[in-house]
Amino acid sequence: MLKKFLVSGFVLAIFSSGAFAEGKIGFVNSQKILNDAPQAAKAKKKIEKDFEKRDQELQRIAKQLQGMQENMDKNAVTMSESDRRTKEREFNDLNREFQRKQREFREDLSQRQNEEMASIFERVNKVIKQIAETEKYDIIFQEAVYANPRIDITDRVIKALGDGTK
Image 1 (cartoon, helix red, strand yellow):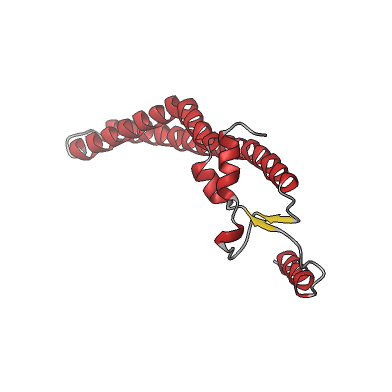
Image 2: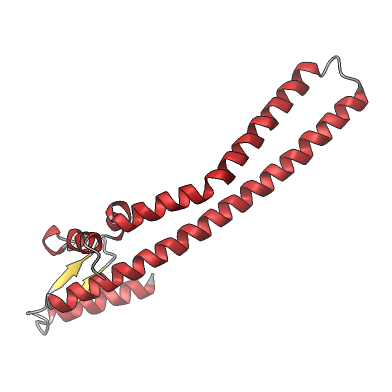
């Protein structure tokens, strides 16, 4: 937080001093890039495809657990004590396995998404740098509380990404 405040103060001081009166500023909306860039859509589809079988397995186990619970609830009165304990043990074992697989799935998915996003932003940063050098920008921000649409170059970055420009 302090770092952002200091950077904001520094930028404000430079612009207010007039020393940077001829400067050219740009802004890139990172969230819009993640929503609209072709690479982001491609990465999302690839991740969904790669994790589809594991997701289906988790759904299968969840249905199995639900069926076991319904069966135990329905037959609880007629079931012997030893059968009830056996069914509860089986249910608890499967539930633990389900929770473990679910946790691993979430962790693996998160890691994979982070890797893909890092790869995308590596390309995005190259494109931003190329645009900055070509169009002689002095500074381009990727985070801001507010940015005038006049300085927003997000659509140009997305177009350059779509054109395959690196």
